[in-house]
Length: 372
Ligand SMILES: *Cc1c(COP(=O)(O)O)cnc(C)c1O
Image 1 (cartoon, rainbow, N blue to C red):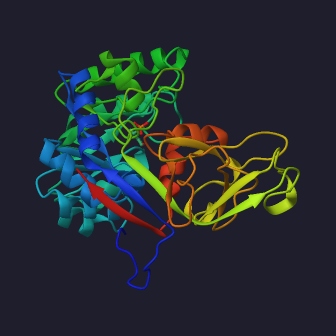
Image 2 (image 1 turned 180 degrees about the vertical axis):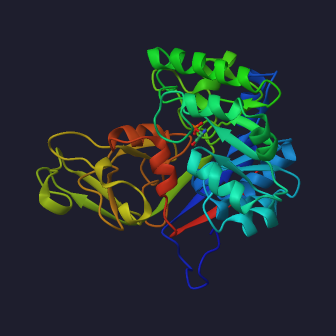
């Protein structure tokens, strides 16, 4: 939820979400695959950006198809987008029928037991389904043989009324990986078995690296939110979220003094350290910290990068602001933890993870503001 408890007069920090940048990213991706419809993955609260504002902004821009992981997420998308097609990627579970029917959500069926359960409970379903075929990831989806058997059974296809056939790349972020070509060829063959059903294969990385695999509907997630989809190339997307925390104290630290838990980081010179009000409890991962053994991530004050000093605490981060412009690093000022100056993926690199994890880990103590 994006609403703040009423008692939170002074939140840890704020997340500013630029909906104009989000829409620009969606249009950019759509422009790369003009023959396909461009959908949007809004699972996990729209990668931490807030389902409702994101869905409303993308709907207004013309997005008609949304993908979520869970039924509850689909219900929220439906409230924000009354006309959209909404697919539930994690599929169908017994008991989902009333919610799926009420919100007109389309389950993505990916195993024989799931198809069986769907048919038992949904003989009169008013929603179509998607069929997920596994082409090499071994996560969700029918095996190739299972899919062939379904496609060869016209009565079954008629009962299921699939509105979409989809698969998912395991290695789209590494365009040279040989599995990509294998999966693309298998998917082409599977689609050929149900030629009248629209097909979907491409996530963000695949849109950027192999637009030939766009098929009928794309499913971008991370690139919509400005994250890096292809690790080995410059990221062409605009940042969407700016995460800031407030400085609550600035202190002088002499050369050689230790900063933070474990005393694992010592100041290399006389300088100043700013303590900001956010920490790993807010999703700023502890592994982004610095020690004498190696630097950590940077934050930024007014566009000027400043390094993290020492370990990240639960509610606090120390920054070496010695080189920040005088007067800017002061109590009450906001510092950017990531955003337009410090890419989320750069912080993620320091934390040994990916931008997806940082974005979806952002805590509830931030105030969320929407602009654009
Ligand atoms: C999350 C997800 C996507 C979006 O992937 P990105 O890498 O964020 O673009 C697409 N398809 C499926 C099946 C997913 O689970």
